Image (cartoon, rainbow, N blue to C red; front, side, top):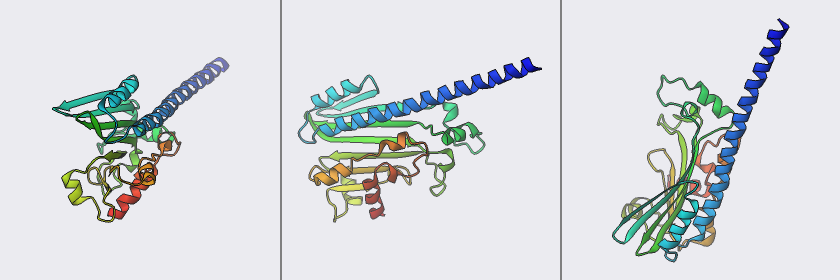
Length: 242
């Protein structure tokens, strides 16, 4: 009996040790994404709309291609460039939106500070000159928060902020306020996400605030619950609009 009890204790200790090591590994990956995302944002900020060249964008993509997925799409004299870095937990830990799904493992994962996330950058260039640069961050919401926005399915906090040489026609018509003609804010779709665009003529202080992403949402133990926690200035703009 004592031998059985001894082996049982050893088994429990081994399982706990493995679970602890798995948690440390996953948490380490979250911190690694945060560190890379902070460096990527700094590189995005180093480029200048209406001045930097597509060659500089390509050099940036080459620098980061080891850590993320890059895409380039060109048509005539216009090109779009994208870089995406992902940290995804295993599917069984990410949750399922089906009402009959058993999400106890994802809910447990939420309680121990683990979450999936994506960081990315995007650029546009015309005739070899950068006309837009942007940065985006997506952080997985706890399963219990997915349907809190009027019953709509919102599984992530998604925030994108871009400096652009000009707004699109529909943006000028529907989202730009006369009191702030050089910046705009809107939801990406319904209650999902937050998208910020601003022009180069915006003040330096305002441009800095609209790119002041809070990366703590990637690593803090208790999850962020609102886009406000990722980009406070952008959230204030969105609230003023509505």
